[in-house]
Length: 276
Image (cartoon, one colour):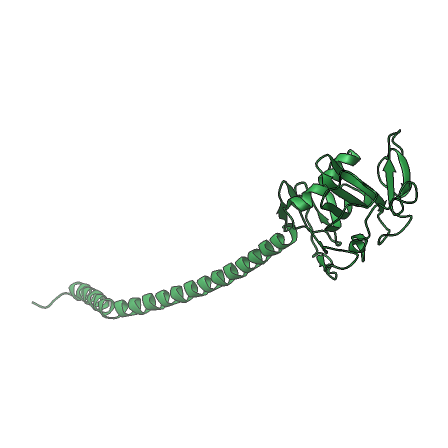
């Protein structure tokens, strides 16, 4: 029996459907695979680009941060050294403080200058030579403590120059006569009051006889008359032109003595102040 037109059309329709399914099953999977590969490749490329950008940005940020940190350390840290119970730090000039905590900072390096000598050889007028006492030593602390005591002050000194030397007692002192007299030359100023500045001669004859022996204005040089002033006796504290603080007693020229015949330093050590 021949199929009816309706059955043929229906069968044709089903056959077309079958052909469509067959084509779909044969071609579309391949196309999907290609599309998938293309998509994966694109994703990989995008990831590589993103990672490269991130790494480049990270490198730049790290470098900038590291540079900033180094600069901060360089400009805020200030080097310092111990001096026993005191602390010393660099000064933009030639001065070096002798005591107190170091809290100051600097954003510029200290000024460079020719280093001052730290010792002098023995000579006829500097019998044993002279030396600059080392930081942290008793030879450095002693004169500064005696200046504070005798001047009735406290605080940190900025020491511009210090010399220590020894020699015999002056000839006009009969007794007691120590075998060796210690002397210090100190040029310094108070760190928190720069106007409090002078050059001091400090002596140590024995535990019962030590302290400031004479003083000269800060701007003077060498060992000259009448720069170096000494004081003897008691009296009302009073200011003295060119010298810091208050002073008591009779004022006289240290180089010649209170009566013009008793020099303050023996001839064997006067040369220890050459170049100051």
